[in-house]
Image (cartoon, rainbow, N blue to C red; front, side):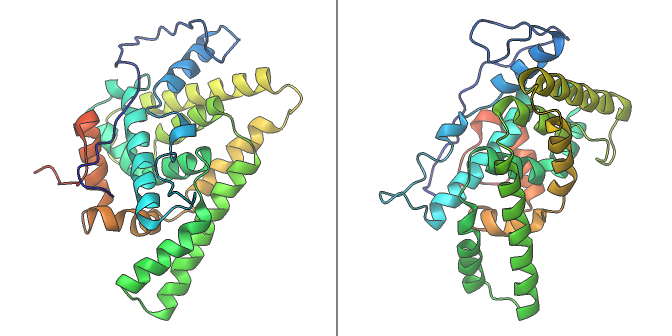
Length: 271
């Protein structure tokens, strides 16, 4: 990644929601209800238009090089953290809870972002080969590592097949983020309620927008447990070792959360 790259954001200013969700003209949701207003704010929190996620990472021959794909991965990780910082209710949680939720779910959010922006996951084995050349490992570990990469590729492709739209992705990411499985949460019941709200919003949206696909909501929910089959350590090793070295990804996520828009590369851990 080029030195001094600043990860820019292009979102609306942080707002205080207090449970009021107003729709404005031009929003993609036609159903003017409480839950559709919630979805609208989830969508507005996205820092990047997905169509431009990787537009600046392509080489002149439209092939992504290793540095380009790592830059795209960094943008996707930053996007996940920045999105969480600006969705309803998450900023109101205690900072320790915010960190705990993101540390547990970052890899699932990364997979969802990879699918949403059509990340060229076919280059993953090339990244692995480059990494193995730089840091060799035993044959058994290589086999296991490549198996984990295959799982990552499969999960991304299965989401692409469903043609998930941007509103559905926003709801799914909120369902993933607001999990009570995170350790040490100060208010488990509140987080559980936010997850249920997100799930209800997704169900309402799918039934109103896809009336001819009665099984769509169920198919989307069934994708969620399999997201956790993707090894977070493999994603870390594949995409982020070149950028942050031996710095734990949890430290990187914490610093992204605390730094916000001032976060930039090259990365230096907050002391």
